[in-house]
Length: 289
Length: 284
Ligand SMILES: Cc1cc2nc3c(=O)[nH]c(=O)nc-3n(C[C@H](O)[C@H](O)[C@H](O)COP(=O)(O)OP(=O)(O)OC[C@H]3O[C@@H](n4cnc5c(N)ncnc54)[C@H](O)[C@@H]3O)c2cc1C
Ligand code: SF4
Ligand code: SF4
Ligand code: SF4
Image 1 (spheres, chains in turn purple, blue):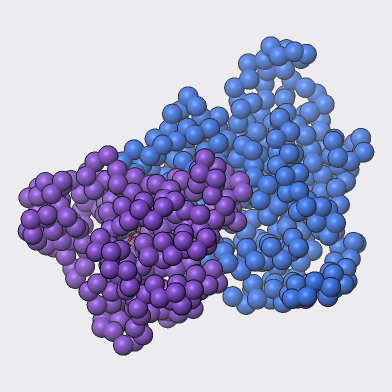
Image 2 (tube, helix red, strand yellow):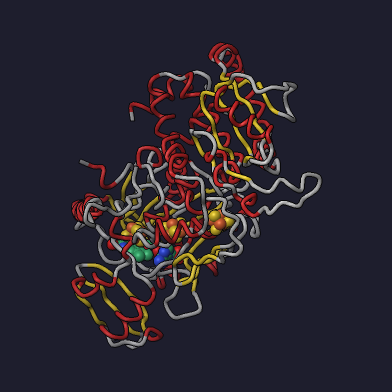
């Protein structure tokens, strides 16, 4: 059944028509292009993205209010960027009335919990104008990325040009063209433990969610989920921001997305179950009620 | 989704495209007798919770107009003694050195069907935990307890100050719980459930809850909600994980309860779009 992909109004394979954005984007440049369009048309006043941090490949959440800042935050950093930490600040110090935010599925869950249960988020919920979710199988602590790059891929983190997870490999690509694919067997143990109870792969609670899986290289799979998402996406398409292909016309298509979603949810559901009997007559806490 | 669509069917009647029609049907759908009775009980708090309630502005008037009669409230209603009521919104902790406070919190429990601890002080003690007495004009008033240490509490709204939107949501859900259709009751029950669980869980809160109940339990994934929720900016993220300046912490419980890995209800949160629309509709 379709629950693993969440509710959605439409799903396409898409790519930005902006070559400059695409050049530094992770996949089809969906996130950056949609935010840039929303910023330029006043749908959002700014967006919380994973900007460059103090250390190589260490993201720092920032409130981007210019296209330049959005561009500087392109690309996937496979370690934690606590983007939701700025959700209130964006409406305070930054004074935004219409906030965009990009995040992993768990961060979308945080945003929606925050809208329905705004315990410490006064006057924030109504200001979230566009929440873009990115697919996510797992994330890593920063120190794991250091270890994977330096110990396993034998690259200085400073010289890594791109990281990518796909086709069963975690691949490190250097500035000078070296490509080191690590089997996921090697990387699994370095994953963030909190990811192992995560029951969402394709950001079911986003307005629009996107990832590489399902679409050809350089293209992205896009789920349009909410009325807000539908509205922004339709306008962006009308403005020529994206080229699209029907999702059932591309390979590997939704079949692979569904398969991976089920694998992730199944595996993590099992972990959640095992927590109940983790000790001797004692279990671990389970957040889901 | 049968649940929410049936909730909507009822409310759709009062939310047609043209305003004139909405005005007339509104009056028919919500006769005044259907209202619940609500009181604001003021224990030892700074009145920030009450201000938050009032900060719903027009929304407060809508609530009072359509869903709730305010039957008690020191500053808002001219009633001396705690009357019988459906919902008591209690602000502040109880000074156990003050006979009247102790008496009133006990009466509140007797008189109210649902007792809601509004805000950090009522729920967890919050800043009143730091009292050592000595203040004028009652220097001997030095011991304050969250209301849950003296009476059974049904629902918590943590935070300092609790947000206008949380108070609004709980009022709406309490109304649906007491006066709604079976589907609306089910929605309200699901919504209120984690806040009821919080009330059962305990009467103290701290940044440390994130350590003991989330991080140490292997559940933190670094979303950042806790830092966003903290009213005193006690929380930063170092290498993706929350770090608390524990001396800054006022023990309000916002971080833990905002965290999606403290409690998370897929039943409720997955319906964020329709529930948000429902709230907008009933507040019109
Ligand atoms: C930890 C992680 C795991 C992922 N796993 C998968 C997967 O299994 N399958 C799949 O199809 N896709 C996965 N993705 C998504 C994928 O890598 C791309 O981010 C996505 O396709 C968007 O590409 P784009 O070209 O549209 O975005 P771009 O235009 O390149 O923009 C990417 C946006 O994501 C933000 N971002 C980057 N890193 C993070 C981060 N750590 N946390 C929050 N925001 C961030 C950036 O700031 C930027 O705004 C994962 C992403 C992350 C962060
Ligand atoms: S696997 Fe889940 S918990 Fe981990 S980063 Fe991705 S969405 Fe968050
Ligand atoms: S809100 Fe919870 S899961 Fe998110 S960073 Fe804080 S402790 Fe971790
Ligand atoms: S750390 Fe902040 S949010 Fe958490 S209990 Fe302390 S004061 Fe409240």
